[in-house]
Each structure stands twice: as structure tokens, then as C-alpha cells.
Image (cartoon, rainbow, N blue to C red; front, side, top):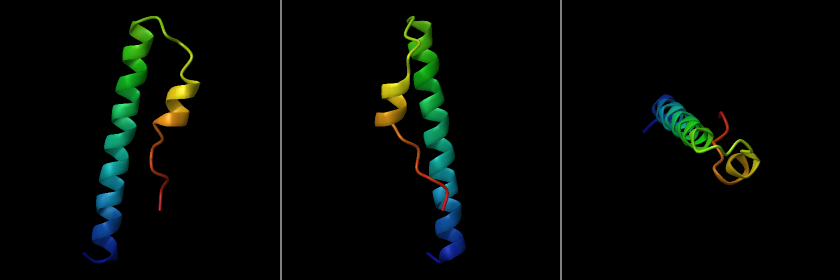
Length: 49
């Protein structure tokens, strides 16, 4: 896979990770858990290339 293909794959995986992290935070808030600092520390989204 060449550079543009890797970049596209990275962007796709990163977007999916961001979406899943948002889902997790929403679920935690629905349960009354409002401090998400540990979640953001443990469930990190890959940085942009």
C-alpha cells in the first residue's frame, strides 16, 4: 500500500476511533458518570499523521 493508501486507512481508523470514544462517553454520561479524564487517558485516539 502506498503513502496515500496508508493515509486514507489511517484517517478512516482514526475517525472510527473518535466515533467509538464519543459513544463510550455518551454511555458513561447516561449512567451518571461525568468525569471522563481516565477514559481519555486510557482510550486514546491515534494522532493525525
